[in-house]
Structures are given as C-alpha cells and as structure tokens.
Image (cartoon, rainbow, N blue to C red; front, side, top):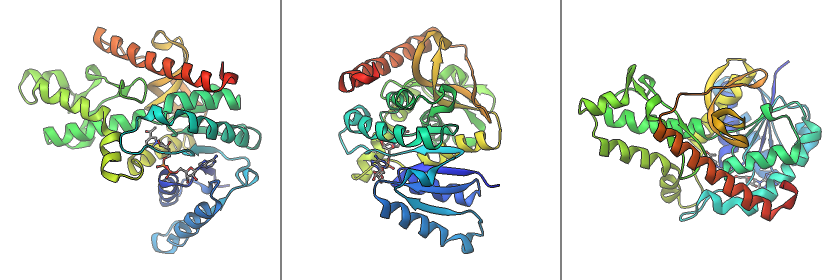
Length: 319
Ligand code: A3D
C-alpha cells in the first residue's frame, strides 16, 4: 500500500511540497488547510499534471482532520510567514495559536506519524507542538538546518566555483540570527575550509560575509518577494527528511531535534545532526566542536530558551 503524507498548510511551501512529493511518487498526498479551497485547488491542479509528468499518486484537499487519519508523515507549514522587516520571532504569538490547533488535530488522528514542522519561529514552535500534542519526541522534528546548510553550501560554491556536491557543511543551533555555521565541519573536495583560507583561496573576510549572508538568507528572500518568504528550498529540505524516514535511508541531516543532554543541553529543541530512519530520529550525532563553535552554539541555544520563555508567558500551559 502506498504511504500517506499529510501537509498541514497548503500555502507556498505546502503546495511546493505536494508537487515535489508527487513528482517523486513518495506517497499519496492530503493537503489540509483552514482555507479548504486552496487545499482542494492545489491538489487538483497538481493531480492534473500527472498525465504529463507520468506520476501515479493520489492528491486531495481538505479542511477536515478525519481525512488526514493514519498519515505516515505529516509536514506542518500552517501559520503566517514573515513580511519585510519582521524577524522570525515576531511570528511567535500568532503561530503559537495556530500550532495548538494543529496539535489537537493530529494527535488523535495520526498518533504514530513522523511529524516535520516548518512553521516559524522554528525551534520554539516545534517544541510547543511536541508539548501540545504529547507525541513522542523522536517522532517530532523541525526542518531548518538542511535549508540553512544548503544556503551556506550554495554561497560557498558560487564563491569558490566548486560544484555544490563537493561541499559538506552543517549550520546548527537555533534557526534564527544566532544560527552557527560549523566551519570545523566544512569541507570542500575533502579539504577543511580553514585550509582554503590559509592558501588564500578565500579570504577570512569573504568567508565571514558568507556566514553572515547565510544567517540572513531568509530575510534576503523576504525582501525580494515583499509578500511572503522562501518556499522552494524549504520544501525541498522537508522532502529530504520525509524521504529518509519513509525509505529508512538513515541519512545524517541537520534538523531541530529534542536534546536530552547531547551537546550539554536538556529539554530543548535545536538544530543538530541527526540520523533519520524508519524509527524517526534514531540518533543525535555529536560533532567535535571547537571552543568558538561551542560558545556560539550555546549563545544560539540561549536565544531559543529566551524565546521559549516568551512563549510560556503567552500560553502558561507550556510551562
Ligand atoms: P503561506 O503561504 O502563508 O501558507 C501558510 C498556510 O497556512 C496558509 O494557506 C494558511 O491558510 C494556512 N493556515 C493558517 N492557519 C492554519 C491552521 N490553523 N490550520 C491549517 N492551516 C492553516 O506561508 P508559507 O507556506 O510561505 O510559510 C509557512 C510557514 O513556514 C511560515 O511560518 C514561515 O515563516 C515558515 N518558514 C519556515 C522556514 C524554515 O526554514 C523553518 C523557511 C521558510 C518559511
């Protein structure tokens, strides 16, 4: 039997997710949105491309959680995106309310699903989702690190004129302005990035600029689009996580996962490399961090903690 993926939120990312999942024939797709027409319209539009593209999956749209029942994977993008000048944190109040509704909707209908959250502010929303739904911690993850790492790798590849496939890197920590590009784990054609700096192939200043551009990668796109935020790269990143789970690929991917002592932090969600297989988050991989990376990672976690404290003030049931 084909697998079932439900997309909660059929907006820009939700629609792109549906299209990518269909093209890959990864699973049947249910698009859920409070705006039922958008979910139904996008499902029908994508389904009508199946004769052209030759894929064979079912797509449907709904605003009824019963139709999402027994999903294998749920990807959540319900919420509002940023407008120019806004930070991700500015979305907290409104998206917290939305995520509470979503948690109620999915917890009884798909209690065993692998749940990938994309709604911002990412780390705090995924943590709230886990608390509201009570679903198991290794089955609830946030998508951000794949996107942030992908942006960093793309910018490096443009600068160094090296194909993206030859570059490995991780951007970890919270998905905000304090995210940390792990330079110690950044390799180009198997060589550490620091060696490229030493050899003068890239200046320290240029590398710092690329790190900074990565941190502001989302805002750069928000500014161009004016209405809404990035959706192609976020959707591609979400699909990679879903695929690793459904096909038990056990890929090592940077995701917002629940920390239970790893990296020295407890009971907080933040971006770390994890292994995703058919049991969900099967392992948190602990990288050897330099002192500076450790310091920056701790600062990033601190900003997630601060924002979660702000969330508790908005909704005391999170305390
Ligand atoms: P958008 O195109 O506005 O789609 C959001 C959809 O959610 C809309 O169709 C709404 O009708 C729907 N919605 C609102 N409330 C509910 C509800 N209670 N139940 C179900 N659906 C609802 O936004 P988007 O797709 O561009 O972005 C979605 C979210 O992803 C935003 O919060 C963005 O900030 C976030 N985002 C995160 C990243 C990360 O890397 C983490 C990147 C880009 C965007």
